[in-house]
Length: 171
Image (cartoon, rainbow, N blue to C red):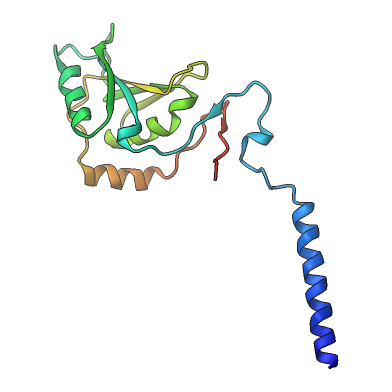
């Protein structure tokens, strides 16, 4: 009988301890927008599937028609290509990904298609979720599905850029 009283008492103490720990928890919103400084944009760090990613493909090379060809490659991979055009001045790199807070997760996925060789240009004031893909003279081809998966593994999870806070995840 004494053993049951001791076990019952221990269970009550453990329950009280758990309740107090949960009520006094100060880390409940760690990493979420609750601790975000006022005025900072909320970055959508959800890793998207290609069918949910909106892009504009812009030719920053001297080669005519390059953006159209790459846009077709992206369409074949189920991306939503919203615009195809030219960038006024070219550059020697592989690509530049320009995006705002709503495009953080999408840009992260696109980095894998360039094997993390694309430069990123985060624009905190941008309001849309489209990512501008500006092709450079160093671009040769998009990565294969296997290469994209390996690159995503190397890149890890998307993170909020400096000057922004991760958007709370809805359960």
